[in-house]
Image (cartoon, rainbow, N blue to C red; front, top):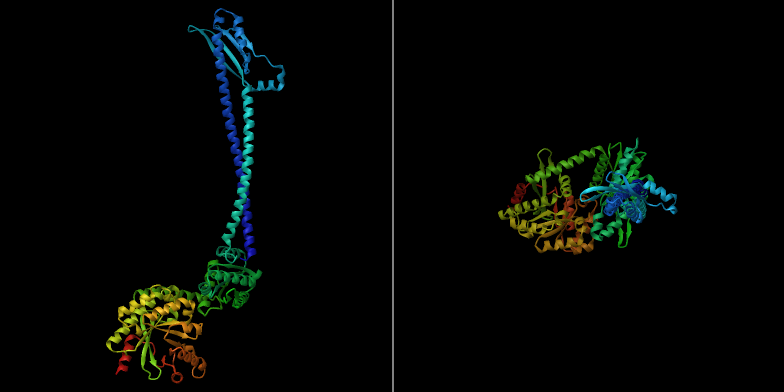
Length: 626
């Protein structure tokens, strides 16, 4: 997903979340107001009940006092004294009327609170609306009831108190809302800002600014959901990204990723979207697609753009890429199949030499399935020790005498026959089985050669060459494993020669040199295999503590008509550094004669001896000893 696509998608998500948050925010304010109103009503009811109860208690107190004071007046029928007693209630502002009744319930004397003419109609109306509280108190003498005092109290004061309390609650609620609403707004703003950041992080690769895996796959599903839509998926994997990371650091690796992302985005433009879906893997979705040739042309243009060097502070960096393409609906019917098929094409591009574009073909699935099957069965074969070691003899170029052997692993499959090492060794490399496989070959070969030497079948200078992979060198215990294999087999270290490739050594020169010095200190010999096919460097070659160079078979097969210059150069280079030279892949007498005349030390190839089981090689050694 290009940046505009990400922004559009994020904007949509943000609008959706904003609408949701607006609804939630309004709901929160409404809920808060409702809660405050309900609380206010409850408090008002409580306050009303409390004030009315207080008024009733006050009336009962007044009635009790009047009852005590009019006892004598009732006994002696002194209405004036009773009336005077009632007039003392004129200071009771809540009093409406007071009546004293005799024992027969007849009115003895009464008192009505005077109406304040200045109070006006509003206060009178309030008094009328407020209602009254009526209480009675008995008048008794020596346990006999002689009358009753009845007081009527106005609840106007209760209403006024409630009104004041209501105003207080209203001001409190308004103040609370005035404080809460800005807080809610600030919270909403912060949540929206945080949500925007989360949306960006959720759908954007932080290094390149492209769509991440999640956004890329989401876009793919959206494109597939459109009716009659034709599209292509391009998977791009950088070929040398790990080398850049290991040699220049992760900051340089990130810079390279940003440059690659920019270069791919420029090529794709508005024709599709670009996303980063892995460490050094990018995906391009081309939709709508005019035809398969459009996808291929785009892939070729991307590959061409990435072949140009990127200029960094520490120098130029080349970032070639392998690209696999797959077209919907021709090659796949779902997003899962599209990605899987494009990945299968990418796998073939990398295995085919890298820096190339491969279109998916249905037969590739069979190859991938076979690879998966062979990986499973290789694990089982290793556990059952169903593999075997063959030995290819190495000869003195002049006398054609066997001076060494190279250990080569072979896999006799019970159904498919012998599986080519060119097929199962890469599988072992990629799956990590090469570490255990290489150690097994080393132990087995050391044991076999030690047995030949003990039996007197081999010359005292017979050497054993064993290939070493990059995965083995990275193992911290590899040196210990080598020494343990020599100790267990009792093979002297000088008879063992480890073969390393140029490309392996150049992956991490410093650690390779340290490793080689450790091996040489232990008395083990070293040789560089396939010399001239990797990243040759004379300065590094001078620093490598090696014993021998091996001329790659691709140069030997050109002899004697072509390739003399390269072969002469390698032999002269080895002489200058005091190294021996072995040519591999010798298959013709003319090649052998040319190498002998050029000063090559040792040769190996089908002309003199093919890889063979240990028993056959032991027979050859016995014949040579006679």
